[in-house]
Each structure stands twice: as structure tokens, then as C-alpha cells.
Length: 368
Image (cartoon, rainbow, N blue to C red; front, side, top):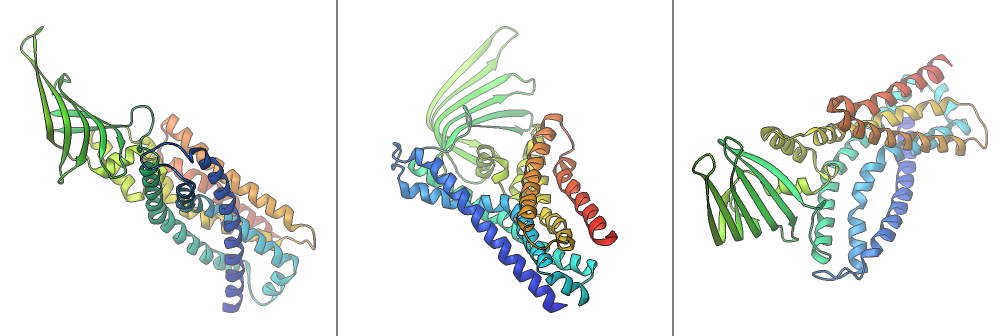
């Protein structure tokens, strides 16, 4: 049995690696074509072709994370169908490789891909994405999102703060910072605007070129405004650099622990965390989809065909993989709009495909 397991594992690993390399090369080409529009643009250092190549290369781990379940399915289907076509799998069955042993063999292989997907998605891809963004901000401009940048909220005792950071620089500094302070009754107590700032010692921001206005309510219809201009100003806060970066970056580009900490910050300050909770649970369940894919590929080894059938089955595997990717995105958007349970929203595509895998395994393998 050990020899048969090694054979199946070796063939599957080679096929998955080949399919993954092909998809990554295709995505690399598309990304490079899209990135060429920025080459020659004016910026702090000038965006050149070498910078575009570096940015696209640093985007490869993110594509690898997204593609692994699909390429695992396609590669495993190809291997199992080819073994069935050459009657090698029939010989394996007569040698004692029953359905449950075959399932256990593929689940072991799927466990390896689960660990690989988790490592790439939680460690390699976030670091590579941040490096890619730094390349773009260094040679093209600032890191920002939307029309107004990042908005965050924080409570300090009986005061609440709305904070806006327009953009981040390549050196990790902040550009165009605005802080709105509200008292216990929800009235505007102060407004602070700084041209720039940086994250100083833990628990404080150092703002530069500050314009600060304080509003003091003296009566029902009377208020006093105190204005202050200062070169620097220390603002105590628990909002860290990672939280600001998280609000500027897409949640699917963040590590699981960063998402969890950011969700806790949003909950503590009364902000909606639905989108980030869905993405958190998606990152938890997404690597497990590799197990579902290898189980879905097993019934292809029990189909009886001689020639000309592998291409059709591989095409079916491609369609199944694409449908899983689309279903995953559809559930994410629908769950966010309909306020569904984040855990069930993230787990639903995997559960649906797990039921399909078990149904196919029971019908084609056990009953036939």
C-alpha cells in the first residue's frame, strides 16, 4: 500500500504543480499587461518597467492562494482519470486498494494542500501584498482607497473620535489627518487637522502642521471657539499602524490574526464588522476546500473509458472549480448585503461541495 500511496501522491503533486504553474503564468501575463498603463507615469521616483515586473511578481502569492483549490481539483481529476484510462487504477484495486483506502490516500494528500494554502494565505501573501503596495507607493504615489481614504472610530472614556487618514506614504507616515472629537452628548467638541503625521510611541500619534479648533458650549445658544496652530501635536490613541493599513487594504489581503484584531477594534467602537467577519471565516474555511476538491476528484478513477475522455473530464473539473470560486464570491456579497451569519456564509460553499463530493463518491464508488 505504501508504494501505491507514493505513486498516487507523486503523480498528483506533479500534475497540480504543472496546472498551477500554467495558471500563474497566465495571470502574470494579464497583470503585467494591466500594469503597463502605469509605466512612465510621473511619481516620486518614476514608475518603470522593472517596478511593474516587481509589483506583478509580488502579486503571485495572492493568485496562488486563490487558485490552489481549483488547481488541486483539476490536477487530481487528470491523474485519477488517466489512471482509470490506462487500467492502472484497476490493477491497484485488485492489489487491495479499496474505496476507503483510496479516499484516505487522497485525504492525506489534501491535508498537505490545506497546510500549504493556509501558509500561503496567512503568511506569504499578506507580506508580499504589503511589499507590492510599498513598491507602488514609492514610485507612483500614495497608498489610499476610495475618495476620502480610511475612516476609523475610537472611544476614550466618555468621548468618541472619528478619525480620517487620507493616505499612507511609502515610509509608513500619514497624510492629511483629520480627527473629530465628540462629547458624551454627541456634540462636536474639537476638530484637529494635520498635514502629516506618524505613529510614535505606543498609544500616541505625532501630528505635524496642526490646526486645532475646540468648541466650548457656554449656553443653549452660545458657543466659544478656541483655535490653535502648532508645529507638532501628540494625540493619545489605541489605533495602531496595522489598523490604519487594514482599513486601506482589502480584507482578503490581511492575515487571519490581523483580521481578528481589527474586528475586535470595530466591535469595541460600535462599528459594523460584518464584511470583515465574513472574510475572517472565509480565510478559516478556505484552505479546507482543498480536502473537498480531492474527494470530488476520486470518483473519476472509477469511470470506465478508454480514449478521448480525459479532456472532457478535465474540462468538467475546470468548470467545477470556477463554479466554486464564483459561489464563494456570491455568498460573500449576499451575506454582507443580507446580514447573514458570517460563519455560515463563509462555510456554505464548502458544505455544498462536500455534499456533492460525498454523493458522487457514494453513487459512483460504493454503489457501482
